[in-house]
Image 1 (cartoon, rainbow, N blue to C red):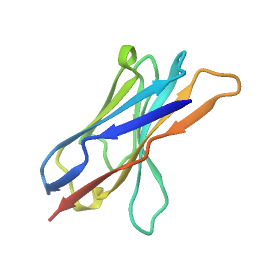
Image 2 (image 1 turned 180 degrees about the vertical axis):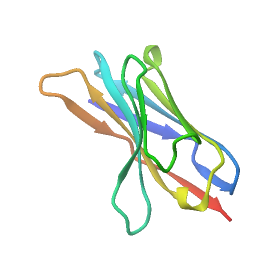
Image 3 (image 1 turned 180 degrees about the horizontal axis):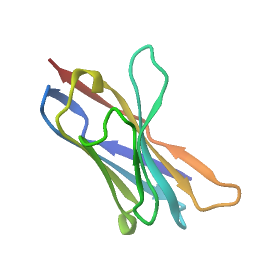
Image 4 (image 1 turned 90 degrees about the vertical axis):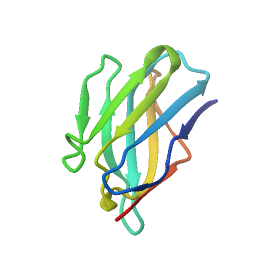
Length: 118
């Protein structure tokens, strides 16, 4: 059993910053990719940022230059530093982890609400 627990969401004014954390626990040998997704009301869940075990990163165009993803492999934790937040960033943010298993298994966190006021 693997669990992902997110923290760090909240209410912030436009232009502000938040840092999200997601810690994985349970029967984990190794985690490959870790990522953050978000889902706004009435919209589909979308990829925000992804990071490989070796630290290669990929960002959605909408957040490039404002958000930074990082991870601590020893702690099985992924972070998302969000700066210059905009009202359009308002969504529930979910972390995702792909375990190094055959077949690959992916797990989701429960989500954390981020609300940016104008």
